[in-house]
Image (cartoon, rainbow, N blue to C red; front, side, top):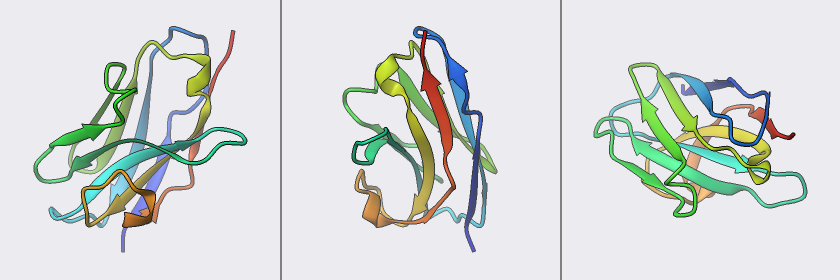
Length: 119
């Protein structure tokens, strides 16, 4: 059974950096893990995914210059730099069996962590 628990979200100012963590258990080498986000009143948005074995990462094109996804044995990370007000959202980590930016291909989800970017 896969379990995912996010942490690290908080209130930051524009231009700040923040690293989110997701404690992971139950993943296998065939899994992919990703980050999604949902801003108030907006649809869920893909951020990035990574192959748990390969470490190969794929990003939403508009975020790849500021965000970095990584993992170690039991945690998934999202390093976010040069944060903007429009990055305000609940950030979710997710795990699935396919390399995809589409949320419905992910079987397991964390509860989310709030990131607020405000001056």
